[in-house]
Image (cartoon, rainbow, N blue to C red; front, side, top):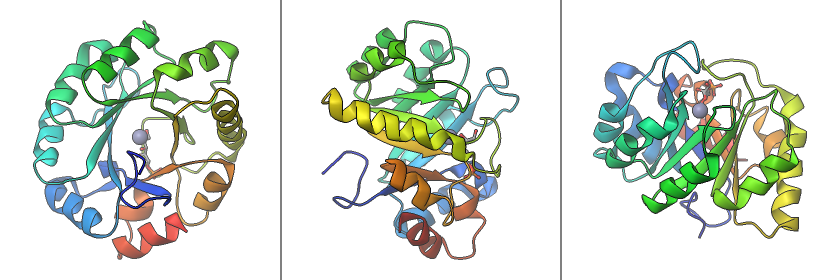
Length: 224
Ligand code: DX5
Ligand code: ZN
């Protein structure tokens, strides 16, 4: 079974706790776990890379004590190399950072893998797929394609990113890579089929799950 799935061959759904009730986070995570979530997505924002602030290692550590699911930490931060270790220590199972930040990307990916977590590379909607990026892919366990501009939940899905997913799927095949493809932003029952069709293995969904009255039904609707 792939590391991102709880059930073999099933599209994984990763609820983003950005849209959960922050005063009841542990309970919210337990509810989506019982409702069939495969991973828990944590949107970490530093108020610099994006104009918003969320949570850090303390919340990550508290959640890792309240769920068996893998914690997928999406670092929307300018200096991931300074911060990743505290998320690993807090129990993250996957850590992704943005292609748009400066730094030694293959070096950081190798450090993440060496620390025992899955390494992910995130692409903002305007970021094109270039050969330089293709050459980095063997260093990563997953690519996260943003389908909204990062910083806030509840935005409208940008369908123009879908060709990037299909192209990444093609590169994965041609280059024989073991790479999961994740999509994040504006995913719900109406947009999920487009993402799955384009090649997504992991669907992040914030509002569509946590703003619904039936978490199990919304997760099932997104997956199918
Ligand atoms: C945006 C975050 C997303 C977001 C998804 O910066 O990376 O994970 O919370 O939220 P929805 O599903 O509401 O678009
Ligand atoms: Zn995210």
